[in-house]
Amino acid sequence: MTTGVASAGSRFAEAVQTLTPGYFALTMASGIISVGLELESIHWLSAILLAVCVVSYAVILVLNLVRLVRFRASMRDDFMHPGRAFGFFTFIAGTDVLGVRLGMAGWPAATAALLCLALLAWVVLGYVIPWTAVLGRAERPVVKDANGTWFIWCVASQSVAVAAATVEPLAGPDWRSWLAVLAVVAWSVGLILYAAVGIFVSLRLMTYPIRPEDLRPAYFVAMGAMAISVLAGARIVEMAGAPMVDATRGLVAGSSVVFWSFASWLFPVLIAAGWWRHLVHRVPLSYEPGLWSVIFPLGMYAVAGIYLGRADNLPVVTAIGRGELWVAVTAFLATFAGMLWHLWSTLVRPRSST
Image (cartoon, rainbow, N blue to C red; front, top):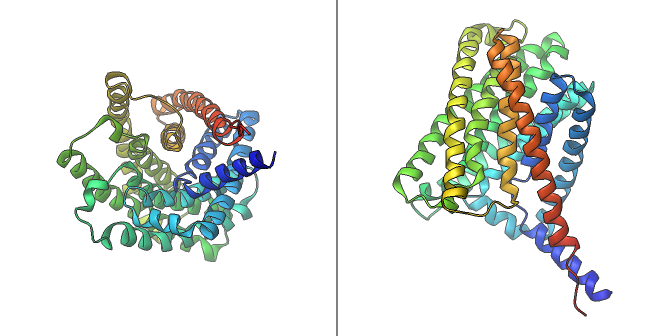
């Protein structure tokens, strides 16, 4: 019994030590699909996904705090690695997605509080991670480690814009103009970062050989980053009159349609990459934390389509978003079941032979 308990404890400690920085993508995925279901008035299922979003956020936050205390060297190594460090930006996006969904549930104070937390993390990590993982590295070239997780930096920026636009209608007059500035600035920064990251990731794909195992699920974030730019733009257009919003409303509205079109164009490309990886080269499809980086873009594309279609009276875009929402729900359930089985088989089921 003692040996079994010790073994279980060691397995848990190892799991915490090796926890991927991007696990908040689970919170992002469950939260955004819950938002989509709420927009479609499927309240019971949306509430279940909201519960998953809240629980996953709390659990992953605690695990990261434990990791910071007990396995600081491992976390520091992740901050220094360009292939893993950008996963920490999922904390910002997960915080904002949770805040937006709680706002829809009638908890605007929680939305505002989580926005403040996400904003602080966005400012700090937005400067720290590029330095520790890219600019401060002695090893060159760094571009060989660029991958789809770099796009999470863009997602984090756009999530701040969405959360700011969500809080703005409930804020006082003195705060509305500042929230408008924050939303437009975060949206703009996210777009510039998308262009920069796209260049680096494209250089990596064109300069170095592409192996099947290299095309990991995180590349789907390229589509998710574009989709959340659409949602952020649509929310900014709806904001009350403010100098920053009035100056950019036309640009933001038109750009959102263009970005939705590009996200739609990316969809077949990413599906083809998955086909090439798993069916042509037979890389096994099994659960890995990175799969949540596929589910979030699916859900975000659905919500962006629903919201943009309604805001701009584009029924075709709305219909596509609604159909995609059920694809996202199905993919979420399959991935969630895979995660539970993975946790059971790696942390719970193994027993000592003595």
